[in-house]
Each structure stands twice: as C-alpha cells, then as structure tokens.
Image 1 (spheres, helix red, strand yellow):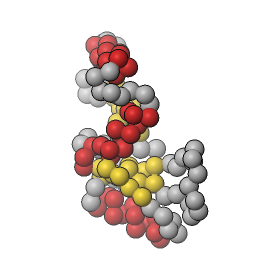
Image 2 (cartoon, rainbow, N blue to C red):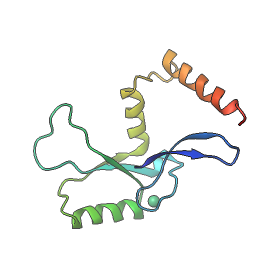
Image 3 (cartoon, rainbow, N blue to C red):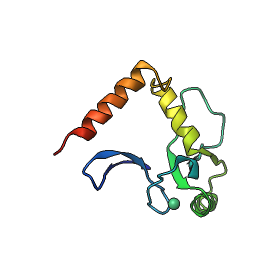
Image 4 (cartoon, rainbow, N blue to C red):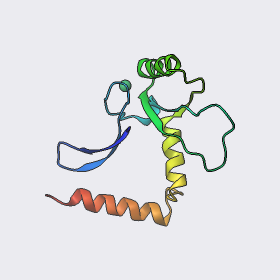
Length: 116
Ligand SMILES: [Zn+2]
C-alpha cells in the first residue's frame, strides 16, 4: 500500500506516499509515478484498480520489468503530482482556495499544533 501514515521527527503525523519498490518516502511528487495494471479487456465506468507508487527512474523500471515478467500486459502510469491532483479533485477538495480545502487545511494545522 503506497499511502501510509508517517510520524515525523517533531511528533506530527501525516499521510505520505511510499515507493512500492525501495520503500522510501516520495517527498517530491514530481519525482514519482503512479502505476497500475488493468486486466485485459474493456475498462468500464466504475472500474477501480490498485495503484503502485514508485520513484521515477530505477524503481519505476524495476516495477515495470517485474510486472512484465509476471504476465501483466497492460501497464499505465502518470506522474504522482498529476495523480494527487486527481485525488484532490475526486475527493471534492478542489478548487485549492475553495471552502472545503480551506477547512481541510485548518483541520490539518490544528492537528499539527497539538502536542501529545
Ligand atoms: Zn523507490
């Protein structure tokens, strides 16, 4: 599962993207990919697919090679930053300056301001 909750050095927590190949945190969204392997056949509205997240470059190539060796004939990817934009859009948080995003930011800041 490439999305995990991380505890940071200052004690704050937050969701982070983890590379499914090397296990490192993908701290720069424009330096990582979202990858998925749909089965053969026509995609239907409402279909969902598990995704992998990889660092661009070596980790991405390793995942694609592994998938090919495992018989996945279809492999698709997009930049993680674009994928996260779609996640925000599909979660109802856009526009970025909108009411829902401002509320989410406020809750996150309140959580980070708590000391445990
Ligand atoms: Zn990696």
